[in-house]
Image (cartoon, rainbow over all chains, first blue to last red; front, side, top):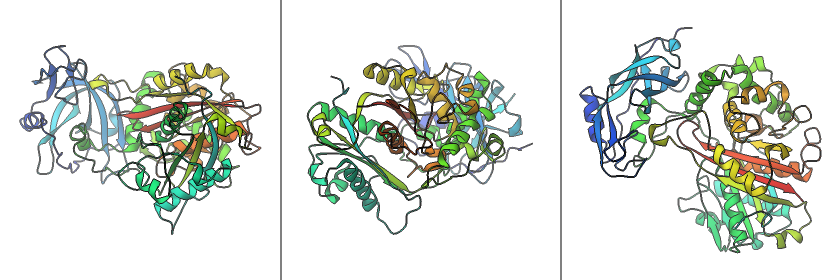
Length: 133
Length: 385
């Protein structure tokens, strides 16, 4: 079985106050995570207050964008085209929901190395996704 | 303060229809309430507490239904944790009764089926939405992520998951109201179309209209009623989320709600004669059984094989009404029917071909929301008196 990646229409995310730097960076080809300057840990999705220590001393930091597939699922029937939803564990130790793109979706496996890439949303910011490396 | 022995389930009703036309949502809730009150031997005038979730009409908690049914109540709650809401609500009703806030609590769930795999346009104020919706999360793929990781870490197979559906179908054949009554095989399940790898169509629950209601009463009122008394002896609740990105989707909130309920009840998993386990998908059951301590972590796949969940065959009869896999899943919320079938088993009123012998202690567990992102988790333990 082969399931070639196809581009999918991605509605522009409706942002909440404070989300803009993440998506502005994505549009510039950078992946950012929120980092807590008190407990020195990254977290995701980004919060104003650290979910580990509740400090408000959080800031966005650019990360490498490399990681491994933690889990994935080829969603075959929910949209016009099949797509691979996934959790990717970044080298910084944080796992994020994403899509795996630009490959035969049937070759994706847990534990595979991936690197960040960016796909456009409709009239909105770029969205971080991952490709197999 | 404990709820143990402070509250009893006195009435149950499951709406028999799976496709309902020509009925308003409020009427459907009220008819379920009427059925449960008649089962208990009580009237609407006895009710002084009302509990519902967001399937009830109106966005102001229960007050629209309280008004529709002509109720005057002293306590109410409208917790929404998806399909697990009704296990939370029964526990909250028991807590209110134990605290003397009310003495006859009515819990309803009702609604019409809805598409389960559409990417919904969620409220933008939800903080996680912008970081998740672009990736196409739907109910089934968010459970599939947990199934895929479980397979990767523990070697669980599609054939093992299939046994959950197979077992439910063996029970559903005896339920005249079940949406799907046909017995299926492991081959049928693994050969049904992949919806979101590794979950097949038959790994998914049904979507139906319908509903149900439960009446929880004080011990004083329970003594005056003629129906067999079912005592609540333990309740636990705890949602699970993404842990700030330190994600581990190999377990559910049952790792916390289960021990709380078992400790309060003073019983062990080996004391449970019957279990209603929320079965949105086959993986939900496998992981929940592990997390409640019926088997070791990672061994849920082996545990459910070879009919171990089939009444009269295996060690842990589950979902003897056919569950969400086969019987019904009204408004995508299967929590209320989990409680109802556990009460039938404790009363000795399940179908004779699935009735568990000497069923004195039963458990019901609800999982609502999405297994791999955020879900509610609630466990109830009940005892026949």
